[in-house]
Length: 58
Image (cartoon, rainbow, N blue to C red; front, side, top):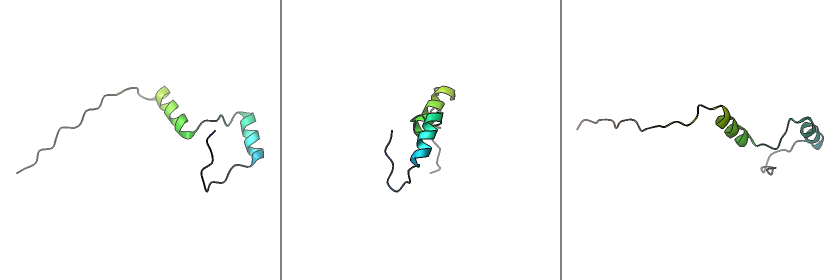
């Protein structure tokens, strides 16, 4: 599990134990959850090209 950031208040141990036991917490970070959901449900690989260069008047 990731370490607590400085200045953050940790969850009380009784909540931690209860949430882990109930399966609400699974040791995932928000970053890992979002990346997993994007890979699973996202639109898939895309190919992007740069827009055409704008023309300027001289």
